[in-house]
Image 1 (cartoon, rainbow, N blue to C red):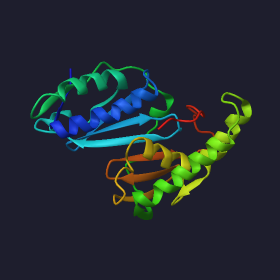
Image 2: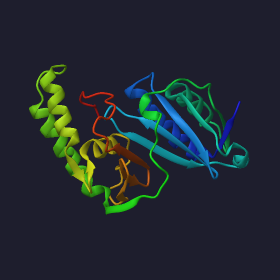
Image 3: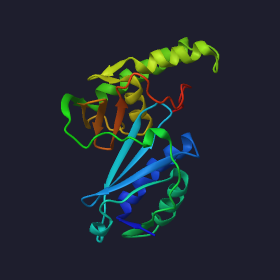
Image 4: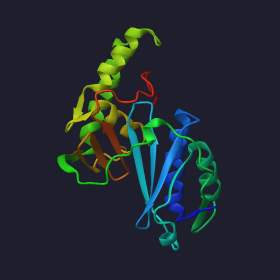
Length: 220
């Protein structure tokens, strides 16, 4: 069984990310990929975007290069949460593989990405808050067909730098915009748009018929 060597700080951060993902859907899966001494954790969200957190690995990471596994977000959260309570570096056992969401089957490209807008997180938060308030004021009874149309229109609307509002909302929910002065930027690649922050990245597909995971409001 593969084990990821992580420093305590990185393990704690990964545990927090996994807790949010599993909080949205306890059955959610995440996809782990190891490249050049780092592990990337891709996760779906109810807003039909992919989130990515990348953390550095410790000694022995070279032997794990190329690892690619889809595992339970909740199970990995429990493992990381338990060992992150220990002091110093920890070893995170990768749980058994499972079948994940179709959204994890095709990941965003590593590159090249065309640069987009640059700014700070504090510029984006008011936009998200305004969109959420407008949505809550206009959405009818949850579960109706009209509610789905309102949700799609709200979250597909332009957010910032060509990235749809759904991506900005997901970034805020994940804590990626928590520090007002944090530098953020957007990027474009064929079929994809992304928002990059110091805490993680959010990717939105440009496809005309993307997989819809959910259209219900997401609680903060």
